[in-house]
Amino acid sequence: MATTGLSEQIKPRRALSLQRREWIAGYLFASPFIIGFLLFTVYPMLYSIYLVFHKWDLLSPPRFTGLSNIVQLFTDPKASLALYNTAYYTLLAVPVQIVISFLLALALSRPLLLRNLYRAGFYMPIILPLVASAVVWQRVFHPEYGILNEALGWLGIPPQPWLFTKDQAKLAFVIMSFSMIGRQMVIFIAGLANIPESVLEAASIDGAGSLRRLLSIVVPLMTPLILYNAVIAVVNSFQIFIPALIMTQGGPEDATLFSVLYIYRQGFEYFNMGYAAALAWELFVIVIGFTIAQFYLSRRFVHYEN
Image 1: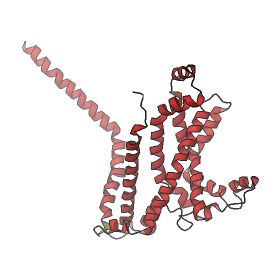
Image 2: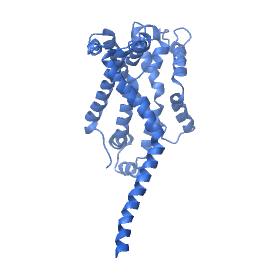
Image 3: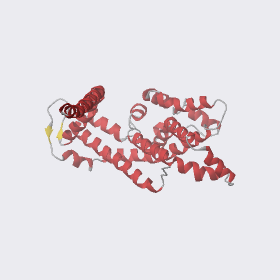
Image 4: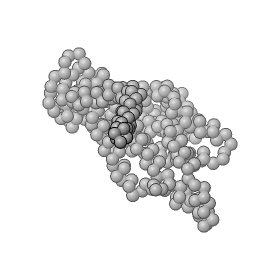
């Protein structure tokens, strides 16, 4: 009896010891990511909060300035202009990106000749370095030798100074963003492949045409992916930086001075790291706000099968 009682006490201890060893092993395997995340993400974010209340030029020690950087956010006209340019680009580019990528996914989900080649071609710009892509697009928009003006000339439209006027520079960046829809297209293609054929066949037997099946079955079932692509596209659009830095450097007349480019200038050109940190946190709050608003407004429109 004593031996039985002792063995019953040892079993939970062994189970607990095994569970502890599994936890330790798991954390050891995950430690490279955890350490990197703490050092290169969490610590910089916490330190940037500290810098919001300081003035620092990267050379001298940070000097406490209270709320002066936050006050400057609401009085700096260029900060407001950068936010306006970013919002203009986002609100104009993202909806069109979603529509084009969805239509491409519908087309490339059908049995077409060389379908995989087309898919790869539309996805290719995603894997290209942003610097190389920006240089190529700078050449595309060249007022004299650009391929876009060459194509417009075939239609009888005179050459346009795309990157040299305020309104056309913004439009040029919106046009350029359409080349990056490959990621959204691939996600839509995967979602379309998961729609049950039996549902579409049943609707067809009931007399629903192609357009009716698209609007009543395909689009509702794809709304979770539409929401996902919209959220990711908004976040990426608010972070546009490298094309503006290389192609226009924020010009002409600050027409392409986007928020991240202005943060870069304040931090690494003007060496005003405290104000740059305040601008970064302002952008972070705005992006989080947009994301929450998208989830809130989509509750009535997003359809989940379960």
